[in-house]
Amino acid sequence: MESILRVSKGYGNQVKYAAVLPVFFFFFIFVYTPFGFREFYTVGGKSWTFHLLMLSCIMVGVLAITRLLFSVLYKYVEFQWWHYLLWCVGEVLVTSFFFALYTALFYLGKGGMPYFNALSYCFKIVFMTLIYPYVIAIALRIIDNKRKDLEEVAKEPEDKLIKFYDEHKRLKLTIDPAAVLFIAADENYIKINYLENDRVRVYQLRNSMKSFESDAAKHGFVRCHRSYYVNPRHVKLLSRGKDGIIYTEFIREGVSRIPVSKQYYQKLADML
Image 1 (cartoon, rainbow, N blue to C red):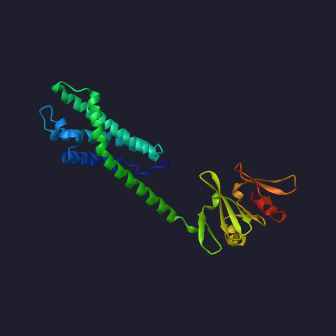
Image 2: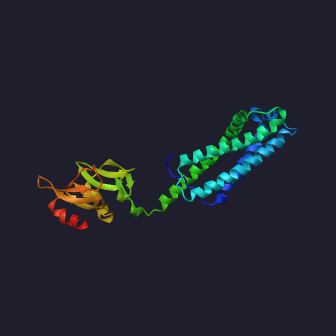
Image 3: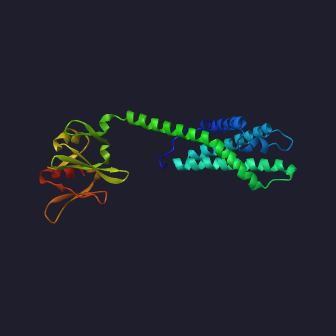
């Protein structure tokens, strides 16, 4: 729910809610008359269908305004999914407030009805009715967002990503080279140290460092030791330790430094 909501920025894409939701509300209530709606709105000398039509018109007005505000804010504010869920709940509340005001005014001729009693009833019918189209609309929006994500991935040239295979030529990991910190050899395995969601991760697979040689130069990696390839984009500096060995110091704090052999030092130093 913390992912970014992506919808069209135009008001036209949002105004459909001001039409679809009231129409659904009208026909759902007309067919099922839940919560004693027919009896509750036989008031003021008008039929319950008259009140249903008036309430549907009120919903049209409320949603037209709230969706206009949403389309304006969306141009300047980055909405996450939980923001959008709160917005939908807010629409239900605002609609219920106006429904309750309408209901309380019509009940004046029958001795009156406390506004908050009317609000409790109106919130129940609005929430329990609109939850269906809201859930369907949100589900369709999530599916559409996922589809667009897949299309964007498909458009990315394959050579921009590094593909790691195991010793049996089975694809095990595909990753953006910019996220990789360094690659280390560990006996019959290689360990890919990379960043994911701002955390350092390690992926281990069974293969040799030799299997990475062809991709290393293509993606800007440099061999700094017999057992290491490093991504120069993440290296802050090279420093000599008390033991006389040169090590890489990474820009990101907390990443273990790795040794640099003398034969590879100059090439790596020239790239920093």
